[in-house]
Length: 173
Image 1 (cartoon, one colour):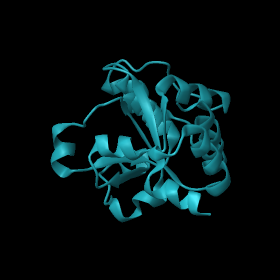
Image 2: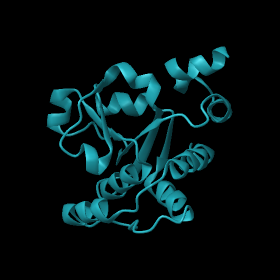
Image 3: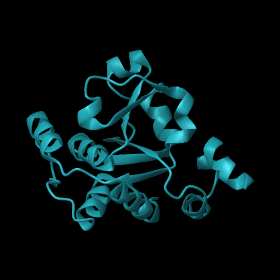
C-alpha cells in the first residue's frame, strides 16, 4: 500500500488520525526507536558535535530519560519507526547494554521532527504502570537517582513494547 510507504518518508505530512490508522495496519509488530528528552532540547554540545542522537529500543528506558528531563522543561518520548532510520544507525556508546541504545546519525531536533509520534513523560509512565511494570518513579531528583532507576528497572518484554506502541499511538497528539 503506497500510504504505508509514505509513513517511511514523510510521516508528519499525514494527519494524526490517518497516521494512527496506518501504523496499526501497516506496521503491526514493527521495531520502533524511543527517545526520552525535553521538548525542543537540541542536545548537549558533544551530541551536536558528533551529529548523533541516542535512542533506545526500550520505551521504559526512554520514559526514564523523559522523567529525568522533566526537571528542565516538558519531558517527552519521541517514537519513530526504526526502519526509516536504518541507513543512519551508527555504533552506540558504552551504555548500549544498559540502555538498549541505538545511535542515529542525526541531530536530536531532526530526530524529533522526523518522529512518528510524541507523548509526554507522564503519558508514557501511565502506560507502563498500566502494563504492570514496577519501579517507575514519578520524578527523578538527580543523576544518581536516574542511574539507580535504570539499573533496577523492570525488564520489558517484546509484548510489552508492542502494547506500549499501541497505547502510545492512541494518546499521541
